[in-house]
Length: 102
Figure 1 (cartoon, rainbow, N blue to C red):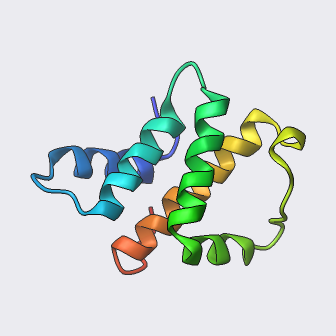
Figure 2: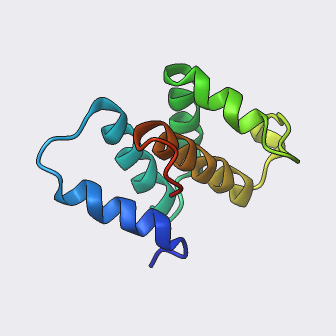
């Protein structure tokens, strides 16, 4: 079960939509990677890289969050990787839904 009610609401919303935009598909796939059990660290790292390459604007937004700094994947805990996915989900939601908080 998701701890993050906002992400759970977005997940349900996207699952019920008939047609998803490219950004919504990416939000959905990132959420699925975020909630995956057991946690697939390698897959999560690939998803982060994919999102960073595709949405350079969200990378900038995330880097502006106080306390966020760039650290190589091999120096980050699994929880840190999950936190990065969550920040990406939130930033993509803001982009997709006019700054509505996930």
